[in-house]
Length: 216
Image (cartoon, rainbow, N blue to C red; front, top):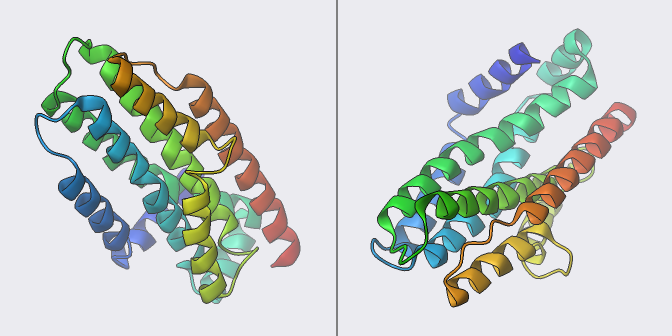
């Protein structure tokens, strides 16, 4: 699996397709977060921006290989493992710069009476929740379920929007926890939402791997 992850990462960076999601996230955070503003509000914006960015990156990793190269890798390592490596790569990089953004925002924002460890924990769990939910959206909005680019992109945008409004969505619960915390001046880490997002991302990845073995 390590070799597959390196392969997918190399493809992503050589193609420079990582730049679009990264610059979108940097623009979101740069435009929406100001030094000295209430920290939980800033963390909510920082975490929420990760959802569409992770969905985009996951879709990019799942579609970046030419069909011939995909067949060679699948024959050498197994179609399921190759597909899973693409999903993991697309999830890991947004999580990495999301973590860095959360740490920066937690240090620069106005914490009031909130303790720094509680703020960081809350921000990291919210960011991870949104990233994992975005990974689930990107996985479902890509091959083998939606191989056509137009339908795939439309589903990605719609899924990212619905993830913030649909009852039961882990991302919605994480954002609600941050909004409530900002109003009550208390940091309540969204642990259950993060666990739900992890289960959701794992389930969609497993479903996608099984589907790609049957449909491709």
